[in-house]
Structures are given as structure tokens and as C-alpha cells.
Length: 432
Image 1 (tube, one colour):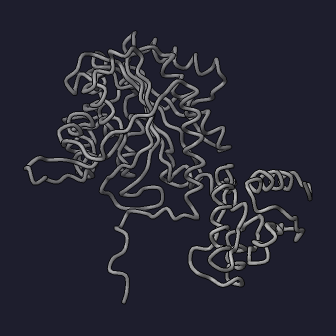
Image 2: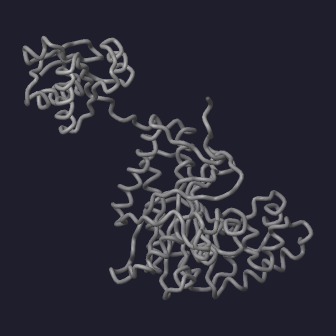
Image 3: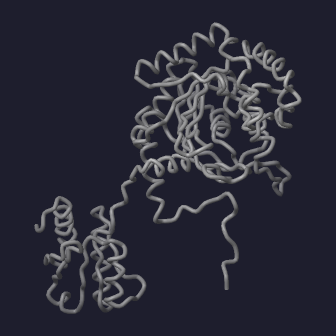
């Protein structure tokens, strides 16, 4: 009989032999976030659809084409989260986190869902690390969140990442830019794709983000937002660049960066890699000062970003960056007979309390099969307990690499003595 079903298209399994790679980068992300003063936030996997329509934006591809939306038995429209910011912003409002002091600094590691054509670096279920900061309009905060992303990439030893930044203005200066864009694209209207034709009236700036080669070529000569920034936005952008220079973070100003979601204002940025083809953006974000108001709250300037874990892993693999494998089983203890098996279970329990990994047979294998299994899992030491060992209350522990054997007592001191033996072996020593 065959398997009744397989994984859904656009999703991937992370198998036990692969999960350590994810855990490695997640641990670095958590460590760096904590060092910058960020604490974890966890939000539901689904929200009311209106949250994303209002927060992400009606004119975005995400809302128009990509959301997993369905009706509940209670006739409510709910959507699997397509990104992490809207849910975090909703939580900030619902739980009145502003009362706990500003700025609010949160990070998340979460899964997101978008219905789009699966390809390398773009899945229907994907995972993101995200940073959210609420309650500050300072350009220093913009530079700081960029510095946090940069510190993560440096710890992961990722090379050839290019930071591109831009300012997309604010509600005061953006209308003039929209007018100039609309006039420009009206002259090439017959060449635009159907999606960009709908954007022309609602949000012409989104045309700059179109992936169509024809629209991208047309957009090359479009007006630049940098020529339309008001004094406040211009000063803010100059300050962000100055702070990045202060800490030695290199960047390139790219006036065509607009990001794909409607809630962005002022600073936007992307870290781009040349190692994974067309899906080269591994981190993107910026400032979204009007988001909280759009969701019904008082004005609360905000900013953040998200980076895709799948894309990061692709970049690291393509660059040959080795991820340390987890420590193997420290000791495998084989028990021959019921009494010996009970003693083996007792001993591995004590070893585990010392912080080491230990295993014994739970399948009912014979001795030969148990030793094969110990070798397969890469156990550093092995030990066999039978009637003779129980009678003498001692047994030999074998170093699986050198073959050297060391006699240890089968009493309460076993875990302590084995831990010392294991530590000595780690430093290349051969005995206690």
C-alpha cells in the first residue's frame, strides 16, 4: 500500500537530519535580537482578513492574489498570515503595549503563507525572522535595525550581501511624486502589464516594484522619489545614511526600492545576494509610521524588517558556509537481559542529567544490531552490560574512535566519571 498523500505543493519538510541547520541560524538571530534589546512576540497563525487588507494594502499582490483566505463555520473571513508585521501591530494595539514604555522592541520567528508559484527561494509556506519597533521616529532607530540585520549576516559569515536603501517619503510629499509618476507612466500606458494598469490610478509607485521585464525597463527612466522628498523626509534620510557611515555599514542608494507592501513610509531597505538568482532579497524592511493609525490606533511611528530563513540557508549553501553539526550521542549503553537493560536505562538517565546525550536500546535488538546502531548514530562511546558486569558492578566504556577501553563503576558515580572521561576525550586526552 502506498502513502495516502504527500506534502502540499509549495511546502517543504524539515527532517531531523536537517533541523540543526535551522536551529543554528535561529539561535544566532535570537542572540543578536536580545543584544539589541528585542524580546520575542508570538501571534496567531490566522487573523481576521480585514487586518491584512487594511494593514498590508488593497493594491498589493499579497492582498490581491496571494492570501489564503477562508470562511469559518461562524461565517468569519480569516486569513493565514502572509507576513508578520500586521499581526504584531494588532497585538501592540490590543494589549496596549505602549503603556509598558517606549520604544516597544519585539522580534518573531514565524511561518507565513502566500499562494504563488513555487520556485527556488519562494514557497507557499515559508519562514521569517522579523524585527518590530514601535514608538520612535528617530533616524537612529532606522540605522539600528539595519545594524541588527548586518550583525546577523556577519555572524553567519555570509559574504557578498549588498545593502540598498531608499526613502519613499511621507503623506506630505508623496502625492507630488505620485502625480509625476502617473504622468510618466500614462505616456507608456499601452505597454504596461494588466496588473500595473490597475496600479496606475491607485498606487503608481507600485509599478516600480513590478517584476515584468517590460514594466521594469519602462520604470528605469521614471521620476525619482528623492527629487520630491520634503525637508523632513530628506533630513531623516540623510541622518540614516550618516549613522550607517558612523558604524561602517556600506550601502547603496537605490531610488527604485519601494518594497511590496503599502504600509511603508520614509526609509526602505533591502539586503540583496547575488548567490540565489532572481530571488536575491534575503532581508527587506523599513519604516511604517502610519500603520498603527491605519489599524485604528493613535499615531505611533514604527519600523522593522523580515528576513527569509529558506533564502538565508540557500545563500549559505551556495557560499559553502559550513553549519556546525550537533554533538553526537555521547554514550550508547547496550543491556543484555532484562536486569541489564534496567541498569542501562538508569545509567543513561544519570548521564542525561549531566547535560550529555545518551541512548540505549528501545527496539529489542540483539547485541550485534545494537552496536551497528551505535555506530550509525555516531556514538562517541559505547558500553555493554550483561550478567558479569552486573555481578562485578563495573563495565568497560569503549571510545568508538580510538578503540581504547576504560573501566567505570556501575554506581552513582558513573555519570560523573563518564562526563570527565568524555571531556578528556574532547581535548584529545586518552584517560582519566
